[in-house]
Image 1 (tube, rainbow, N blue to C red):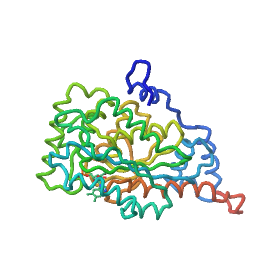
Image 2: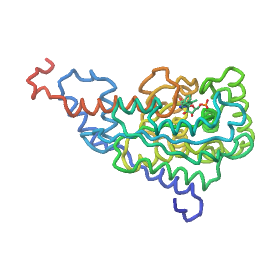
Image 3: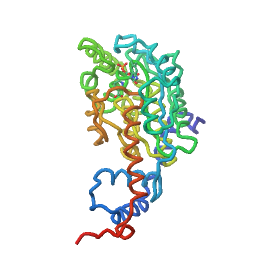
Image 4: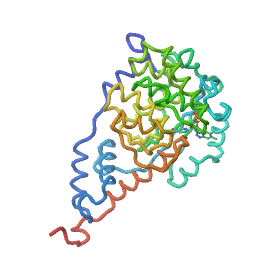
Length: 341
Ligand SMILES: Cc1cc2ncn([C@H]3O[C@H](COP(=O)(O)O)[C@@H](O)[C@H]3O)c2cc1C
Ligand SMILES: O=C(O)c1cccnc1
């Protein structure tokens, strides 16, 4: 990313946030008008009707479609993992990236089931970010550059993007970011992640509290929260969400970690996630708290707590169905079906 006039890379991010396009209200009005003609009682498809309005409003067309959907997974490693805050070793991050490439992960099968493209971006896995309990995760230039790298995921004619992550230790990072953005203590935002016992969850809370203490006084700016308490995959997801907005690509976010990444943008401007759906409610307990803090409702609630984009990828099926329903249904006139008396 090129440096701005002041030499502060985060200024480039702020300039993008200030220039975000809004929803195409003419497209939404046209979708509502056609919906009223379709062979079903008005409102009978519930949230499927608002989903197609969302899709068309953000794609900027009265006939939205999902022809080139992509799942993007960003992978990163975290210095804080040395604090015993995950049930798994950090070597699993690289091993799972290889598993994604070989087709052996849960996300691979969900992509097959829903006909989704999959791209995996690994972010310097052999150089973990700084341990947030003693230092910043990243410098400003590195954080902004990683956001810019995440923006690349939206290239190539993608018309719906599902965002997920892989990074051992990143539910601790998500908890720290959530606490940095919305307040509260470590205990408010941590949970079992990959399957920690109560003692492990307590270590996570302590790690988050230690990070909040050493970065205290520097957390008023959401981008500082991201660079100090975050991680590369979170920065890349935030960049991808922002780039998608600029390119009119609707976004589906995965669980707790992806939501924490996107929340950075929400705190810069609450309207910055209006082009996003939240694919599912993760079983990681603080996901609900985080969604509530932003007034967001998830699409699915399947008790999943995997990450790697799985909840977002499953929700693409609903969005695609909403578009097909709207585009393909007959009107009352076309089908010769009588309207309401
Ligand atoms: C085999 C395996 C596959 C995964 N796929 C996603 N995650 C998920 O678990 C990690 C976060 O949990 P924690 O903070 O407890 O480490 C992330 O990598 C996330 O994507 C996985 C974790 C494992 C072990
Ligand atoms: O909801 C998530 O993002 C999540 C939950 C557990 C483990 N990894 C990710």
